[in-house]
Amino acid sequence: MSRAILAFDRVVVLLLGLVLVALGVAAVGWRTGFLESLWPDVPGRIGVDTGRVTGDPNAALLTGLVGGALVVIGLWWLLAHLPRRSVGSLRLPPGEHAGRLVVDPRPAVDTAADVLADVPVIRSARGAVLADRGERVVRLRATVDPDVDLAEVVTACDEVLADLAHVLPTDQLRSRVELSVLRRGEASPRVQ
Image 1 (cartoon, rainbow, N blue to C red):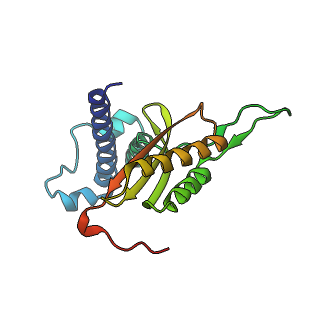
Image 2: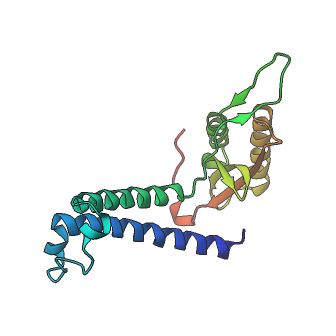
C-alpha cells in the first residue's frame, strides 16, 4: 500500500470515527436536553413522529441506546485503527523436543543497547523492536560525539548485532542502527 493511500485511509477512518462519535453524542444530548443548553435553537421536535415510526412510546430510550452504541462504535473504530508498531513474541526454530518455542525480543534488544552504550566511543544507546513496512526490525539508536572515529562506531555496532543474532532468530528480524551526532556545544563529560 502506498503512503498516499495509507494517509488517505487514516484520514477517512479518523473522520468517520469522529462523525460516529459526534452523531452518538448529539443523539444522546438531544434526548437528555444537554444539546439544548449548547445549541438554544435546537428543534424540540423533528417532523417525524417517533411514536409512529417505531411503534413504541419509548422512542427516547431507543434513541439514547442507539446514540450510546454509536459513541462506542466510533471510539472502537478509532482505537482499532491506531497504528501499532510493537512486535510480540518471536517463534524459535524447532528443537529436539516437541512443542513451540517463543522468545520475547525486547529484553535481548534492551541488553544489546546497554552493551552498546558501554562502548567508550558511544555516549548513549536505546533499543526497540518495531514492525516497519511488514517486517520486524531491531532498531538501535546510538548517540556519539562529533569527533569520534566512525570506524570504531561501526565495529562496535557490528559486534553487538552479531551477538544479538545468536540470541534472536535472524530469519525473522532485520536490524537498523541510527546514529545521532552531538553538536560541539552539547558535548559534556561522560560519567562512568
